Length: 175
Length: 222
Ligand SMILES: [Zn+2]
Image (cartoon, rainbow over all chains, first blue to last red; front, side, top):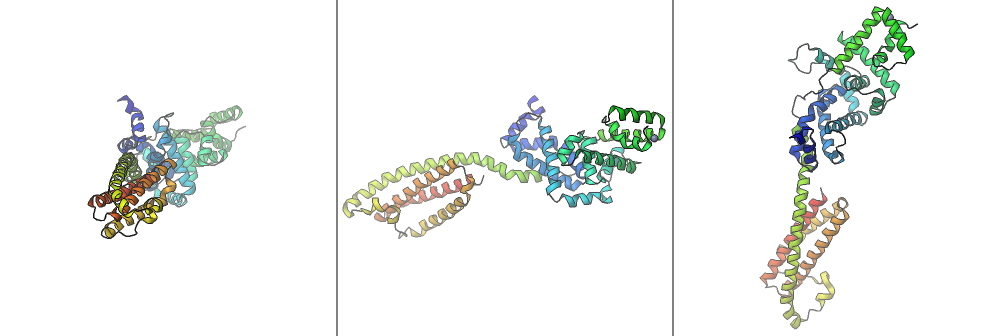
């Protein structure tokens, strides 16, 4: 089914109100969305809430998806917007304070050993919110400072400063 | 001459390819000569490699779909019900038209001999005002219909802002037709209280009115 490979058939069905098709789109994309949310927030519970919000928002805005980009790309933009608007307007400030807590260092899974990747994930979670967001968007997601400045609502210089701080702190933590 | 401080401060931008040629040449010359700064730059470089090698996908530890489905399901079901509603709307409106036609025939047939004998001149002129507030014998049952209809009407009034002008017009047109049929039937019944045909028809008309109002309310709350 080549139509389903890029999710176009599913998207069309979901746009017509087919919840099963939307569930298939969810299953296909949740890992990507959750990865972004958990890294940007440094908190699993916040990421779960935000991931739900992203898909609810996506369902509502599905009519606006015209298929110019891949569905995953469109959804990714929805996700970044949801996380950032939540951070600005929602109860995100509390959440961000919480993630600065060393408790955020607790392993994401008790069974996971001292994996290098997992160490980095945990270290990212301990960064101050601004530095964490810029690091994730720049070094994990590959955005440029100009885009980040626009997405996060900060100056380009601030984005650079955050990145510098984030890298220095991560290298310390990971030593 | 680039110092160690500068080499470390600019290492990020250098690795990101963001430095001007002059600064880039300066830091590269410094790194070639300074093992400590070279180690620092290597450290940043391996951090960047680790960051870009992080898995693109991370699965949440619990299934988030049920919560999402619960939040989107009501509008989704409504969307499906809307299609159903549109179809039902058509059926209700068609039934109403049929009923109104039937009402006209029966009322004409029943009322004519009465009109000849009692001369109900008030019938054509006074309209709804001429309808008795309570109908002996049927009053109880029909008052229930009236109450249900009133409740639905006020619910609809609260939601009329949520309906498109076209839908609203259609709802009001259909309600007017049914209201007209009810008025005719009640007047005919007042004149022919023993006519079971008329009372059955009136009950059915009330039923359709309520059905129509319910459908309209569903359409308004989508
Ligand atoms: Zn040096």
